[in-house]
Structures are given as C-alpha cells and as structure tokens.
Image (cartoon, rainbow, N blue to C red):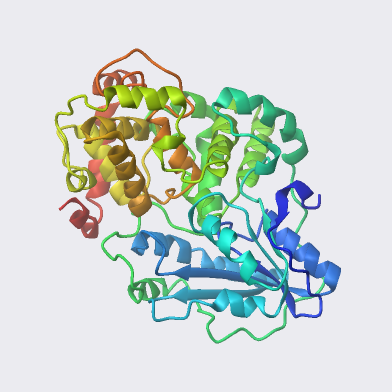
Length: 471
C-alpha cells in the first residue's frame, strides 16, 4: 500500500523543485531501509519527478551523552544499510562529525541540490529539535513522515492519560495500519558522485572511528547488544522461536530472559514496530498462539508513550503529571529521606540494596534493564533522592548516558510512570504518598532475585573494561 497521507506533514511553505538532482531522505531516527515510510515517501516523490533518491545519515560528536556505547551501536548498522541501499539503487552518504572543528552544515549543502527533503517525524531527542528549526532555513519542501508508530501519531488527536483510554482507539485503527508496506522501488538509480565528506564505515574500522571522536570514552560498548539490521532480525527470530509462546508467563521474571529485547533496535530505528508486530502475528497464527500481552506492550504501551511526548514541551518535566500526582508530591515534599544517595553512588551501583545494585549494573554493562526491575529501580531512586525532580533527572541522565533505549518516548513515559503517569492512586505511605510503591520483599515474592543477581555478576565479570564503571 502507498504511504498513508496521515503519516505525512509538510513543515514549511517552500515548493518542491523538480529541476534539481534528487530527493533527499535525511535518516535521523529510522535508520533502516525496510518498512520505512519516510524512505518510501521519498521514493514516491522521486518516481513522480523522475529523480533518484539520496539517503543521508549523520552522526555528530555534540549530541547530549555522546559516548562509545551509543556511537558504536549506531555505526554497527551503517555497513549493512549501505549494502541494502546500493542494492535498491539508492545513493548513501554517511557523515561522521568527529570533533567540533569538523563542518556542521552538510545537510544544508545536500539540500541545495534536492528537489525536496524528507525526514522522520519523531517527538523526542535531536529529531524534535531539528524539525522545529531546520525547515525554515531551506528553500525546498520539507516533509516529516511518521514511520515509528504502527498507528500514525496524528490519528490520536488528544493527549491520552492511561492505557485504557488509548487502547480502544488503537484497536479501531489497527486493521487499517497493521499491514505490510509496499516494497521499496525507484525508477531511477542514483549515479551521482558522493561528496568528499562521506565517511566510509566498515565492520573493521568502527573502533578506530569511535576512538577518533571527541566524545565520552568512559562508557564502553554493550557486552550483549550489537547494532544493525542483521542483529535486530536475529534477535527477533530468536524471540519468536524460543520465547514468544511463553512470554505472557515469563515476561515479569527477569532471570528467565523471556522478553524480546527489541527496544534498542526500535529506538535507533534499525527495525520497526510494524515489522515486529506483523512477524509476531504471523508466527502466532502459524503456531496457534495468543500474543495479546506482547502486542499490548509493543503497540498500546509504546504508542501511549509517543502520544505523551507528542503533546508536551519538555517530556522529562514532572509538571506534565496529572493533577493528583502534583498535589501528592506537594503534600510529601518535606518527608524525611533516609538514606539519600549521591548521583555518583547511584550511578556506580553503591547502595545497600543488592537487587537495585544488580539492576544498575545491568544498565552499566548491557545498556538496558529488564522492564519489571526497571520499575523497582526507579521507585528506589525516588526514595533515595532529596526531592522528586532530582530523582527524575537522575533516571533520565542515567538512561541518557548508558541505555541503548534511552532518550526515547518510552524512556520518558516509563520514568514518569514511577511518579504516577498513566497510573492511579494507591494507599498512602511516606515519601510516595499515593504513588505506587514497590518493595524488595515484593520482588523476592514475585521473582527469583537470587538468580538475577547471580546472572548479572557473571555478566559483569566477562569484560575487564567494564569494571571502571563501578569505580
């Protein structure tokens, strides 16, 4: 099917200019070739104007939290993207801005020869900022396309305050959007000369490229996750064959490793939620499985997070919480906190709580915490911080620096959930008031804490270069 119009927005008044050389697709968040509605729309424009498509992807040293882990994961996807684009007849430019002394205007140079610019519609991180300020600087049409959500964000026209309000809306719309997109086809292959600022990335030179960047070199690459399309598909296939059948029973047992672990690949756009949903549905039909619980997380909960970040200015601000949460925090702001840990103590996993320390260590070495323990992790930071905003800032910064699925709509929604977002009031207690509380004893009753801690300690021992994270 063609790209649905409701996925597409034009953000400036400049015209398309078909007398130029190509349609430029700027891949900011959806760094993939397959099931990419923005790239499909760029191809449709190119075919209409009898032009080729140029795919531009950049990585700068100046984004917040730039470090070896995030750079490596993103660069690991570049060689396969280039191969797939070449096979599709699409040009590819990758630019690695290593230091601030390197030029920072390559998008504008590429846009000067473009008949139109197409990019990703995304409600957080750098893409949100770029899409607010770049369009007015260009003399060609600038389109943003939503390829991150199964149901386009524009179809939920108001902010939703709980899963139960967005769920029926999505259910009504899913039959229209939960469909395989058209194959990517271009009528004219790209035959232009690549600019001299194009950075050649291979599997062998990634470490060298990362080392040359002026970024935080203290955060090592993940011991468990490798970036790129091939890694994403491999992990999805493993989940389908080994864990989907018992996901509903095992998802809240972190030591069971029953979850899909797709969030890093979703965040970096190396695979789409639509592709995962279609693969899960097909596998479930073939094997007669019920997969409602997984699709609830992938579609309902994830798109509730996108809805939240789309309708607020600062997704990390506690001022976005419902009124009952704000009044609750005001009432308990002066409650005694004991102990109170510093940011350094928390970041390096030095608390009295062995389960919390293990969860933080999982973040430090893997770049991701199991979702169930991440809720507990967040609740304890509230308990151990001087005030609520400090707690939220700590969670956001730790995710931003270490998490491969940080800086994402889900990150902000999950963190603010700890304070009551998309939740309801619970019985009152100190510090938390009517926020939901989670205890160590509750975790021991519901999960195998000892097995999880043992597994994390074994993981931490695999790589000597990770040990400095705990110092």
